Length: 286
Image (cartoon, rainbow, N blue to C red; front, side, top):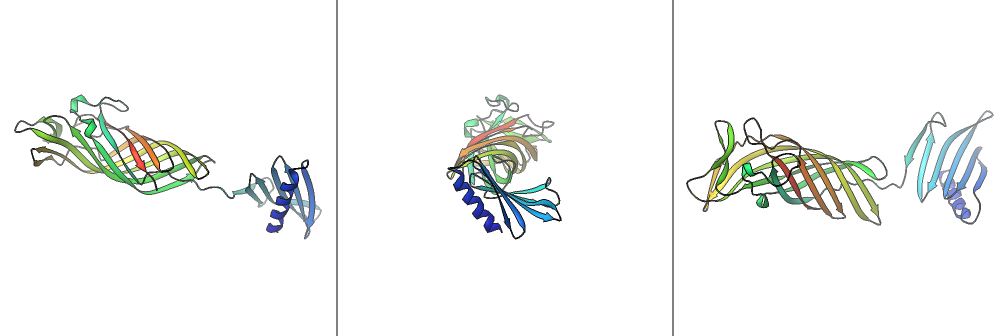
């Protein structure tokens, strides 16, 4: 029966190219098949006879080469619709990414953080995407998520280092040598949840995504170099173990450009300076 319906629909679609809308009825094995074609939309409905009453039990439509099947379970007014030949949505996250990760005075601000003597041109992050998922919302929108892991380095200027004394964290000026490099570093796991628009034509992927992400942080250190000597200032920077961000991601095919602004401070403000992350970078998909 299914093969017969496909042959009927295909024949009607070819006939309709040179004819007016088709409305034809067939009777096969006691079932009535009604075929309608109008403006490139071909519909095949199957009716079964229950005593003297006709009940619609099946319907399929063909629009632009895509089949939409409706199976009527208990009522012709409550169909179960299954779309066929639809492309599965993709989660367009980079396998590997790297970019600048700066510290700002407040959320969404720019221009650095003079109170923390940041050296934003040397502050960076890297990461990898371990797993992804995508759920279709509409034909062009998907809900996507991922698990990403990596490491962040924030650098400071001059002889300033981030130090913790008696539980309080602040910037300290080193006076026993010239500091060649000063930074804090930490590992993270980030889980974004984003609404993504994606257009895939001819195998080329174009996508834009926006949404929040939750970030978990660990193994934070404050270190600096005097000459070739590496010193660990503290392993307790009063970092917030959890953070919330707003992310924007866009790209084409294998290239991903991203931006991320922290909605919560990086350090615990009750015992450390207030600072917010602002990141942007480039990633590669496979």
